[in-house]
Length: 195
Image 1 (cartoon, rainbow, N blue to C red):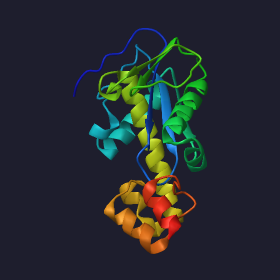
Image 2: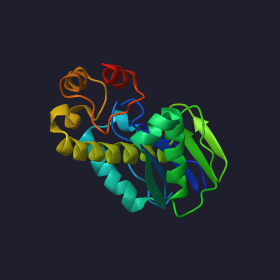
Image 3: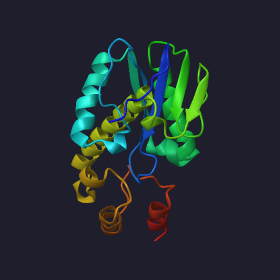
């Protein structure tokens, strides 16, 4: 497991989960790590097993100086588009931290408007410890939300694909129609609404 770098000071890492799915909110997290309480095994959440992510999420919440999770709803995604909704969720997460960061490091190639200087880092969730921590929190919270959605809409298989456009999900959409948690601005959903 690579040892990820972590800049000095009150630097928050920010990442989101759920840009690609056809259903559910986009979730963002912001994390300020405590340099005196390092967390072993942080990495891009996509490279970790679900069980490992859960274990690390508990440790991140216990050891971080500050952390926050926020979301942008399906309605907001459909209204302002997924990129802007992702930026909004990130902005909300940073604002909810409780400690004002000296700067923010954002996974990706663009930054939301924040109260502090921000820098975008492509592949940051595999390079910077606080971004990796944010990616883990965002992913575990979003997955938990989608499991709740599975209980409401069991025919769609959200417990297996978390809303991503898999063959199983697309088949369920065709058979059972569009739910209130589907993103109407996404092509596969929009096309079904035209039928």
